[in-house]
Length: 540
Image 1 (tube, rainbow, N blue to C red):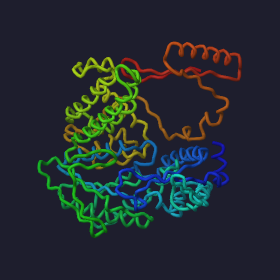
Image 2: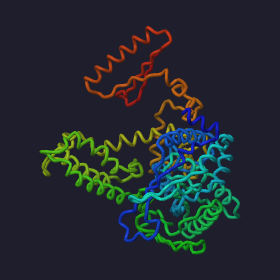
Image 3: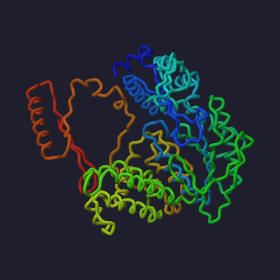
Image 4: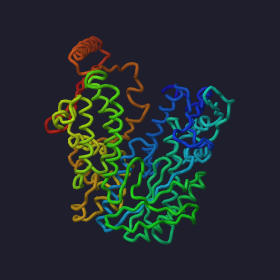
């Protein structure tokens, strides 16, 4: 931390940290390797420099979120914003639009060579506009100058090359710097839409180098024209910022509950793109959307992926040799179950049909229980799951979903999810046109959306805190100022022997603090009561 403070104060980044080694690795399953895009360079940086970058990145993330420079719809490269937020945001907009007899059309676009194309001069202008002092801007000027790298291919190492362009994709600073770079782009896009003679209510989402244009209308021709106009505007703005769209990756999709939707195409030849037609399934940020938001294909895809992983793990052990059952269970909980439940929040909410998705996950977990216990295939499902120590999948989803809902009580005021919540939870953010507070009483009663469940959960929360309070500023906390004078004593495990040793060490620490008048002992404990209310207590 002190090294990071010195680097920012002196506006200097050590030359030793600017040296990199780029290892060129060919991408698998390519027919030929005649073009550079078929290779993946992995940049190896100095470890100490990466730790300092992490410190600077945490501070930059905090300040950019606190001062509101970043756009709320930027959901990539920023802390407390994730792919889940993007999926929940889109799912709610679609469900709320159906209540108004509107379909939702989206255009997903990709920025070609995003990180290598970021212009340093434009970035420095964005840093100044973000309200950062001259020391920080001077530090990044030194950070991006006089950089060099060598390229390694098998046993061959090239000469040194200058890399004073772009932003390192593997750096801890690259996510927040790219978000700062795109913030004025989105702001200019919204301003240009307002200046048009005709009102074009197109929404935009950004996730690092992926963008999404959202239009919600009753007419397909109207939404297509709005999307085409918006696509043309954002394309020109990106060109002015030194970025180029990769038109070949642009995708179109329509969300509707009609039995026989028309699914019209959009001609992008006027803006340099192709004629794009919607596919039956649309993949975005790892989600697999269908036009009716059933997510049956999404669940089937990840359940099948987990079954393949389980089949491969059989070589690690069986009922007579190899891994122990407790080790197999650990592998399943850490390596397989998170894949199967990827973004389940998009389809696991009240009022939606989930039987088919739950059945897919139950079959997958039964196969896992058979592998863990080594039982016969004809064994009863509930019995072997209980022996394997696996919670029923429906109860597990309910538990994780409740934790996910509580997360939104601590998101910053600039988070885009706040614009969809009820007025008492919106944290003074301007409500979206599909926000629950904008719906009529009848529409709120008929709404089936993950945001509706979030509102109900937040109503039961008694206390909340501001995550952007000045006391939480990285580098300004008590632990940062007096790190050498604070010690923590926490149990390493829950076994009886470890708990006994932990109690002995606590007794010694408490006695020493009583003898020394310049020390204080803080005792804290937390738990969950039977009423499912989380409590915490502390004593000094």
